[in-house]
Image (tube, rainbow, N blue to C red; front, side):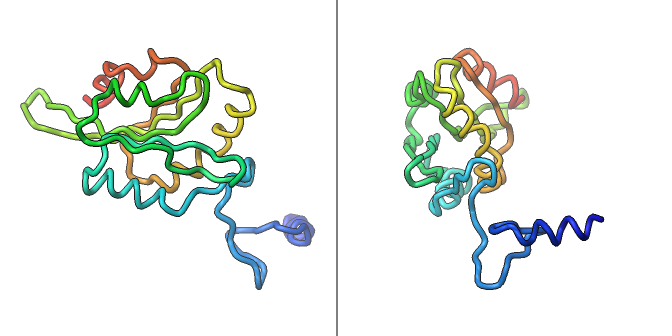
Length: 167
């Protein structure tokens, strides 16, 4: 029965089972639910933040016409957390990475990378749906962050929330 279903689904254009692709087709880098792909430079930008400490934060946005998640803005290492918060739109969704530096109780300097899914209550329903269905795809590209925060209002991304999670 399962095999019959698999054969039936294999006849559907674009269906891929277990990562196998029909001959002559290329794998898609998009999320099946939203159709959003991820821009090729996203992984490189993440590595620059993670390994080289080139940025304090990175903000990503969905570019609907291109059907992909792109880097919207990078924040210099000298920028503050308030600068980061000011970069998040008040009425639209975004994904973000923030490299949070802190000192432990043992006086050890540490850094943790937060992935933030910013989806304010005032944003459009379509945007909330697109960002929600594309989140797993971008998280796959950003493999290596430490903590995830889903935020719908500014109180959910206050510096104290990061501090509490990091300790």
